[in-house]
Length: 170
Image: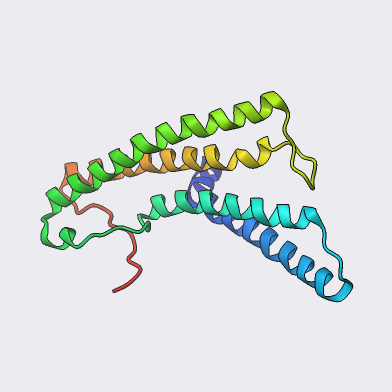
């Protein structure tokens, strides 16, 4: 149970770190190869591209978890705790509906790729592994939104202010 809590608390961070290190190391190796040896590989470019795609979708889930996604919250400063909580819940509900629709359609692309056996140009690996970044990202987003609903409804029930996340600029 403790392991599941650690995974839940840090899953996106570890995944982001893994893909970021993979991206930076591969890109560095490719730049050195290109500049020193006048040679580059097609697989290096693909690894960097697909690592970046995974970074973006996992990062989106991490932003939902921490309520760190970009938003205009000027009106929030003028609202009381209860209306603010209801507005956050409404925003999460809209995002939840969009994420469910996007999950369905992104899985459709994965299914078509698997059905026809498409592979990447350089790595010759099934594109399913890379197309799965989008459904995985939306699945994580939906999971984090469900947790957010639970957290906000609990705060609303006991009369505490809802979690507003970290602000980027103050």
